Structures are given as structure tokens and as C-alpha cells.
Image (cartoon, rainbow, N blue to C red):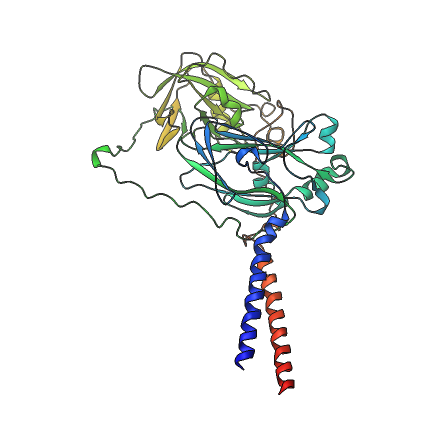
Length: 439
């Protein structure tokens, strides 16, 4: 009997080990090409702007914001040169997996996008763009989705939306580059655990690992900030708490702390005002106002150090946003915009921060005419590649996907465990029979 128990335990250990090995290796086997930057440009040529990049031992990367326009660029293929990455077959499963988190409020920007080859784009001499905002809003192609993570079926999208016109004859496509935008105050950071194209529609442990928040340091009472209490004058246009360096989406606002990088924040199809600090605290003088259509190359060339850009997008689905945009357009050079509770140098805003301005009595503020701001024209799916002058703010897709996963990882491990258990039981039965025969 002891011999039987020993054999059974050994077999169980062996199969448990195989199960663990199979589970841990499954994801690696499924990865066709990791989009994450790697040390020594091992996965493509890496360039950083306004941030510090740290390569972690587990393969993840941590990106710390050091200034406006924080961004990591990776080039996998350039012309005929391929630095890294295998081509993927769209008809055999092409799933883009992303997983990121932050302990202090940083996030990946909506403008984050990976560029890939596509038949219809190659004919035009360009590449296609897969935007983070599309993977977050086009729910019918989601296989899993949650805060900071998701699996998006690029293969299903190409087959359903592009078909033979967009898919190469051999079905093989390749990612060429990545633009990874980071949004958050100076000093904040985001860790990207996964960002790859793979063959599997489910991934175990997706979204389960997150950075731990550092304990808040206690500050002397005299250093604590007084609660911000601003009275907005009656009749003023109150924009409320305007986020800093945040990608524009439908009906939103942002203040870009460095005019030279306003194109990083999807400010196309918005009204923008270049603001310059005055001698009075919290007051900013309007230098120029510009309606930026599909061409965001206009970067306020007369901007000076300390200037910021206030951007307002109007969308009929967001109450008051059209009127706010029109009001901003009515401002003239010399007018004053008030911004309380902001530290533009550190890219920080108080919880009760507020931006407001007063429109001259002779200026009539009305909603923007429908033909000037049509959501149908301004919310094209962001994963659709467009020339630089056609990219428009993304609007959330209203479809609800039945494929949207809420199990954060699928059932691959469960299946392997069941199979291993069945095999162990079968082996035990055989051993028992053999021992009985010997007796």
C-alpha cells in the first residue's frame, strides 16, 4: 500500500509540474510580436520624449513623466529594414493584448497607437493605425476589457471591416512602429505589463497585477493647503476643472502646458486659445485664438516660455460643450482667462481647480451650427488610418459586445488542470490493478 501511495504522489507531482509549465509557457507561445520597448533597442529603435523609461526584470516597462508631451516611440520596421517582430496571420487569430496600471494617476493617452501594414494602405504608400481609444470603445471586437487592460481582435476587425481590400493575399501583416503616450503630473508613472499581438483570445491573469500605492507622507499642518474656494462671477463661462495634458475626446477640454506639443493631445477639430501669464496670479492674457480643423500643424509659433493652450471641443452629445467652444472663439487678444488651482510647471491641478472667462456683452454666444461640428464627421473609428489632417477625436462606440469578457483571463488553466487530473486518476487505477495481479 505504501508503494502504491508513493507512486501516486510522484505521478501527481510530475503532472502538476507539467501543468504549471504548460500554463506558464502558453502565453509566451501565443505571442507573435511584443510591442513593448526593450533595452538596447532589442525590439526596435526606442526614442523617449518628456519621460524616463525603465525596463523591468519581468519584461514590463515603467514610464515616468518628466514634462509635457511624455511619449515613447518604437520603430520595428523602417523601409526594407525590420528591426524586430514577426508578421502575423490575420485569418489565424491576431489579438492585441494590453495591460497597464499606475499607483499615482498616470495613464496611457488616448492617442497611443500602433502602426501596421495593410493592403489598402500599402497601395497608398502609408500604414494603418491601431489606436488605444478604438480598442477601448469598439466593443464588438473586444474579447476582454477592464480598467487598464483588454484583448482586441484585430483579425476579426480586418476580416469584417476590410476584407480582401485590406488583407494581403498571404494574410500576413506586420507592425511597423508604436507611439506610446503617457498622461499625468510630473513625477507620476505608469507600468505597462503587456502590449503584444498574439494568437490567443484569452489570457490568464490579465489585469490582476497593479502597482501598489506608496503610503502618503504626513505633512505639518502649516504646510497643508487651504481649501480652494473660488467664486465664479455671474454670467462668466465656467469650464470647471479642466484636465492638464489630456487627450481630447468628444465634448472635452484640456490645457496643454507646452504649446509645442499640442498635437500630442488630439486637439484637431477644437477651438484653442494661447494664454500668457500676467503679473497677477491666476490671470492669463489671451494672445491668440485658433480654430484647429483637421490640420493641427499650427502650433502657435509666437508662443513663449510659460504660455499654455486652452483647447475646447464641441459635441452635441455633451451638454454645453458646443456653447463653450463658441464662447472661446469669441475671445480676443488682450482678454483675460482665469485659472485657479493649477501648477502648470508640475502639470498638477487641485481637486477644486477651475477655469473661467467672461465674454464681452457685445459678443453673442450660441451653439455651433450643425454643419460646423457634426459628430458623425468628427468621430471616425480611431483605428482607421488617416492622413495627418483627417484624424479626429474618438467617440465611444455605443455597441455592447456579447463577447466582452469579465473573467479576466479565460479558462485555459482550468482545462489543463482537468486533463491532468483525469490522467492521474487513470494511472492510479492501472497501478492498483497491476499490484492486485502480482498478489
